[in-house]
Image (cartoon, rainbow over all chains, first blue to last red; front, side):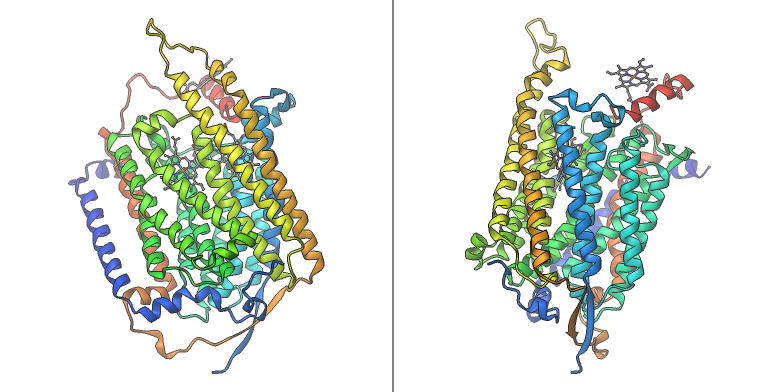
Length: 65
Length: 546
Ligand code: HEM
Ligand code: HEM
Ligand code: HEM
């Protein structure tokens, strides 16, 4: 029953258009944000793995002889 | 500011690492056996349980879900705690996750040789195990999201986004692909048939590659590569673009496994276009990884950890350049069904997953045991023997693939196929199969050397089960405002939902029309449901994995 209803969805061709619009808007927004975002914030984020508050890990030089 | 003392849970990481190594050895040994059977049939041992058709899925399940899977959990449990400056949400959940996953692997190791299989590639396990996988996966998800919620860091580092995307997508893929009708405890029939079955299967299969073998390891790369190089990631901006474009595009590319099939033309084309687009984010990610090592190349020459990681990231670049090319219809016409694909798979599996895992483990063990690596000579030996193993695996398969392809399509003067017996191509490439087994032996030998080296390392140190750390509590005041994406990074649930929406759009748009529009599904009037005898034959065929 429900299948018959869905089989006749009108304007199924609009689906790809909608998805394209979603992509497009999202990516433009993303690019705008990425390139206008605060430089300090970016720097701080890129440092995240290096500081975890543990003594064992503060020596990040390799432990190989 | 008042500093809090907390303890990171290393014990769970240790358990997952041990499982990684054990199942790595098992899975690769089975792979080697399969490789040997292809030129030395006596290695089937004349037993139904050890024939190629049954141990091939055993190999793929063992290396993907046991070796790569356990390594992924080890990497996530280690890095998540440190990136969020908190212990895992709940220790019991961690251990339910660990033992549940190992039981699933055990069930797979028993049922697959017995011929209990759904025959859907990378989803062979029967329905009771499918349900167990779903439950354990949810336990993992709750534990991860719970940890994110109780974090002491305002923002989520990019590695965590990759982990979240992995969790969400694998859950969706697994559930949709596993709809099946149980008939007995160990036998079920898929809900899907015909072209729908094919589309769902490869939407799953491709994205299992994307979200099991790729995204979690990109997260691991974004954490462990900067850690090992002691350098911040090259460009955090690039990593954001990398993340969103990768998960948006990946989910659309599944149909490239079904070129020249009954799948509607438009869905095939969509798969091709999106596969080509994938080059951009993939290479963006690879370059971001390699550039992180700028200024540290002198250390790459000495440090086996960095060497493994450099080759891993390079292999990722190679596999993701080759993949889109394989998706072009004219290239796929040559490579499909040939051993070229097997080479592509193992450049990814041995190079990218394997080497990143080795680099990560060599880095982790000395730290978790508070000691130095037992022998960096042996680690370097492992590196070289492993690299040689990849070369000896991949090159013969590329050559074999081209030979197969040319022979299959060669016509004689009378217009008939020149090689009418399939066996002629197989005997022609026997030497290639032998070389591949040499490659596999080298690679496996490297893993055994690593195991020895790591056991010695652990013996020389003392395991730190609960690693102490001093961290600042999260300041409450700055909880709102800021840019929309930074707001997003502070709201894990919202972020998870958005990532879910991103991957669902691709899946729904591709699948709904195939399911619902009659004209998309070519039907033939003479095709009737199977008779009981036919069905029985089909069951036999599935069981033996021919
Ligand atoms: C010693 C190492 C290994 C050996 C000797 C080996 C050998 C093999 C063999 C003989 C096959 C069957 C190929 C065929 O059907 O013609 C195979 C398939 C496969 N292997 Fe491995 N393998 C190894 C390691 C790995 C690793 C580490 C991974 C992944 C992380 C992996 C993933 C796969 C996958 C996904 C397939 C299925 C390929 C397809 O369907 O096209 N293998 N392997
Ligand atoms: C941009 C990235 C990639 C694209 C577009 C891509 C594309 C492809 C294509 C076109 C095929 C062949 C399908 C066929 O003719 O049967 C394939 C097979 C495969 N690829 Fe990739 N690939 C990519 C990256 C990777 C990576 C990084 C890995 C592993 C870590 C990987 C693992 C596999 C596996 C396991 C198969 C075999 C599937 C089967 O069982 O038939 N791919 N890929
Ligand atoms: C007594 C011997 C055999 C019996 C009773 C048998 C029976 C069957 C049956 C009932 C099916 C399902 C047919 C259908 O899908 O409508 C089937 C499919 C098939 N059989 Fe056999 N078969 C036998 C031998 C073989 C052999 C020797 C080969 C190959 C060397 C083979 C290859 C296949 C293949 C490729 C399919 C298609 C499977 C699929 O598309 O799902 N069969 N067989």
